[in-house]
Length: 290
Image 1 (cartoon, rainbow, N blue to C red):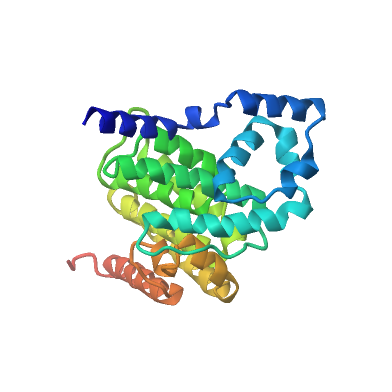
Image 2 (image 1 turned 90 degrees about the horizontal axis):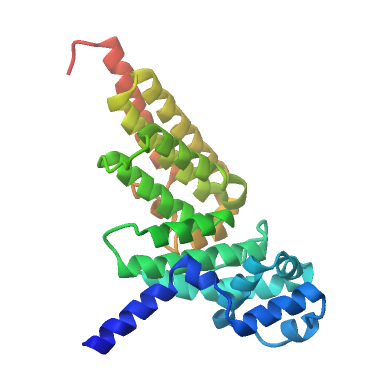
């Protein structure tokens, strides 16, 4: 029992961001060769790379802007895309369906790989503490979001929505600001993830509308619904071009994974929101009706 507890504690400790980024002696020596310009790039990249190498590469690119710049060369794009595809099997292991990821043509493949790996580490922490958001998981999520991880943004936004809905605000936090942060995060992904990001944005506006209905004016509520409806319209517009990104972002579960309605059709989601908006206007026309 003591050995098992020790092992569990060791594994858990290794998954903190600070410890993950800490370089060992050999990594420090490699970092020195990079700084001195004596790093053998051709030898390093000519050797076969697997998912097991992603952590090392992510750490080194974090510690060395020179190494990160090296990795971003066009000739290595295919390598990162292949590793990203394989990483899908690891990340999706935390879901109901294990998948490989498709290549994203409009996203920096190295940043995509790093963001996804940081999200993967966050999910390992979440598996340890499934009923709470630990500070360590949050740090990994924010690191993943720096590299435009759609999975990290969705997880982060869900946490924000939960805080607002259940009144779990910490000292200094403001419900409206948290909801606006969720909207901002979803907007940051629009050009990269198309329909899926627009549905995340629609969800963020919907959550804001739900809060505004209780805490702000009916006008704010309706404006938020209108923004959500517009987002659903854009999701429909880019639907055909977004099939690969929808597959990756939803872990193969479809567009319904993006919203609390569980709807795969942006048009159907739009209809639900439009009905809510219509009911709101009817209350204005018939104020005495319940």
